[in-house]
Length: 194
Image (cartoon, rainbow, N blue to C red; front, side, top):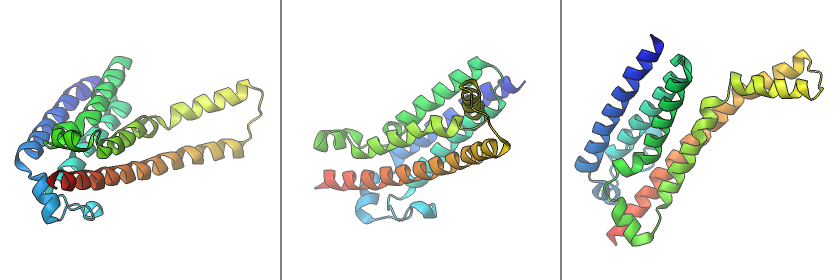
């Protein structure tokens, strides 16, 4: 039953994200928003005035992370987990291209977009954020025990704490890269105007 839930919700998330991407691509004037410094919502990204685009991008990223959370926690079989994760990861990598209609102008004027590089960096952190937890912790403890180390309760507790801190650090780094993506996208949009 849980695999069916994942198999139903992931395509539903993708359908909603495709509609949001279409709205962003066709109805949001990114160049005008960058030039006029339209305030972005939500507040953490209000420092990057891109109008409604920042909100749409954050909602799409939220849907992807929610989908990955479902795949990770609800998916029971390898096939559902693997194909669900791969599908969402590919969609995450393609997200800016689907959302931003002006990328062809950016590529023509300045080459490979710096904003996309930051988006790819934030996307590469996804597997670390997704799979830090019990699996890697057990794998690490297993390697240490096989190599002959004696693990006391305090060492295991330290490893436990470490694996609770890593996702927080990676999550903060991901937010930083998303912010840098938005900042560089705004700068690139302003450059193609001139």
